[in-house]
Image 1: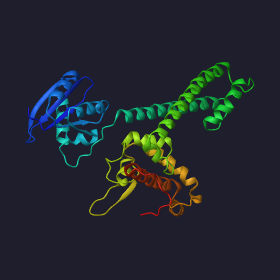
Image 2 (image 1 turned 180 degrees about the vertical axis):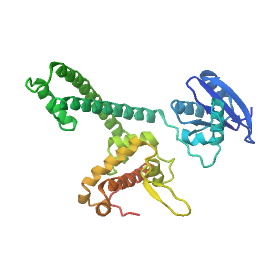
Image 3 (image 1 turned 90 degrees about the vertical axis):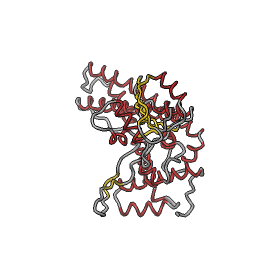
Image 4 (image 1 turned 45 degrees about the vertical axis):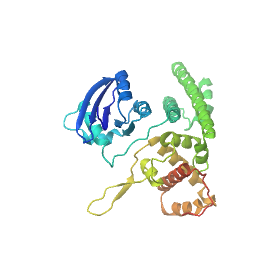
Length: 341
């Protein structure tokens, strides 16, 4: 069977395949379950395999690459315009095989198991943090209904809540006191889980060579360094640092026509989690921008004079992302005293 390009629509247990020959004409169409698919791909001569980036696609991409196939993962939103008329699984596979042949198509790099494990650590920790924040907000709202206020922040809740629960004269009913105690104990457990995962991420950041180089960049800590490595690996899928900043959504949206450029707010595309970490890191750098004596110092001070604090934070996050790309790709730590190019 002479198949040059193969498109696979991924399902949980069934997969729809459409293949093109050397003349880009449909030559193959079949529906397979998981085990027959693995046998089919093992016996198929090496070809280009296109799939949408979705849960399970990274595992399949690694398995197919072991058999010599060139696997190309694509964002689903870039495949959708190629779906013709009505939607079904074979039409989706046809859209995938057509999209993967486009020379301007953008592809998602295949992650290693280590990258996926690191990304899972961040997602679990982020989920625990969100649960803890939601629980604390609910707890503070319940207390406010009884005229009892607690300042924002976990340390303030840790200090104030034990006194509130032990004070019998603050107007809390026995039922509410019991509910608050039941709500507080899971929050303490979540706090321990967050700290445990944070320590594990810090340890991994110190053990990985790429992460250690990223830690030399201002505003980049263990969370940002490991999240970036988990997301982009060595960063070589980007041709330059500006491409990484655009992928993170740290560049302006563009709505130009008739040769008249029009730039809007940042696009906020790509990895929201990593973008948020870079912006938080930039805010930390801005707090001490006036004291910096390296080459970032004059640029930061001029930026603060010209723009709003939030705009300056995003602009600095853009610059830090580009520096981080250079550190990853060139394999050298950040050198703050060198003059700007």
